[in-house]
Every structure is written in structure tokens, then in C-alpha cells.
Image (cartoon, rainbow, N blue to C red; front, side, top):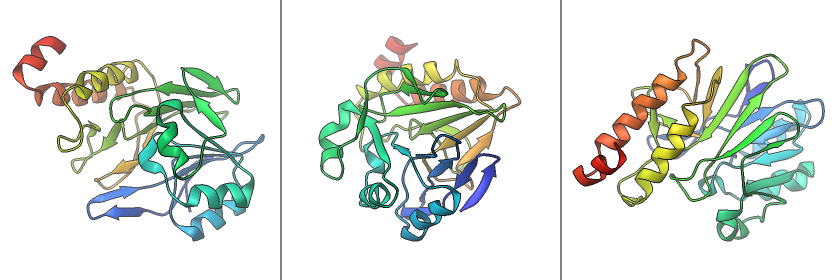
Length: 225
């Protein structure tokens, strides 16, 4: 594991298939650590103990499901948090102990923000750290592409055109936030997170939104413009 912020640790890179990388991120807290996303590396699951273990694990969406959810829960007694819309998918591996259904605050400073579009239950998490920084965990709603640009998680071979306007609305919501550091789940560039403390986040999201809508069929672009 590698420390990337005073209270955030990044797990070793995992590559589910060539060209796609993922990390999980451990947020250390006095009242119980939080793991965002998931790792399939068993040695990293064990390494979590060096930093105080895991009290809760938040998944941004069903693509992060894996057998290590049970390993982590059994090792640390952690609670799993996931969106109600994806309950059936979660149940194949591990049913969440806490369901997300709306925008709300958890544990005092973790804002849970449903952002459907990449999947029905995609969720982002805004954390106001005691360090003074604000962290945004975007899952795959926005990810860093091979050009190190934040890009909407719309895959033509997977999604329908009906998903595009839903995802666009989620991006418009994310553009209103003011994070200092943004952590994606999957990424295809060199890094999985970026410092945006210069205030550039709204512009980066607007650019991602522009590319998302530009790729839509003409009729859809006119409806969503």
C-alpha cells in the first residue's frame, strides 16, 4: 500500500484485463477506517491491518464486486455499503449491511451522492477530511482515460442511448462540487487520482460532459443541449 494523502492509502494496482487498472483507497479515521472500492489482492487485504483495519467498505457500483468482500468482512468485521438499485447483483457475492438510497451524510463527513448512468446504482462519495482537504471518490462515473482526462463512464458496447442523458445529469451534479483531490476506481492512464485544488474540477467535468454529448446521435444531442 502507498500513502497518497495524509489520511488516504492506495492499494497496489490491479488489472482485471489489459489496459484497465483499478485501486482501492483506505481512508484512515479515528472512529474506524473506511475502504472505498475493492481490491482483489489478498496481501493488500492483510496489509490493511497495519493501518487499523476496516470499519466500513463503500462500493461505488456493482463492477467492484468480488470474493474479497467476504474476506475483508471476515477479517475486520467491516460493514458493506452499496446502492439499493444493485441489491440483486450484490447478493450474488455479499448483501450490503447498509443500503444507499438517497443523498445523505454518513459517519459525520462522508456525503453519499447517487450518480446513476454508468450503472443504475453508481454512487460517488464526497469526504471533508479533518486535514482540511475535500476528497471526491467518483467510482467509474468519471475515470481518467489514456490522455489523463476525466471521462464519463459510458461504453458504447455496454450502455444504451438511454443511459447517456442519465449519466449527463450525474456529471452536471458532480460539476457543482469543489473537491481538492479526485479518486476514480478504474483508470486507463498513468494515475487513478488527481489533485484539482486549483479549482479546475468544474471545467474538467464540463469537458467530459461535452465529449459525452458530442458522441450522441444527433437527435439525442439536440434533446440534451
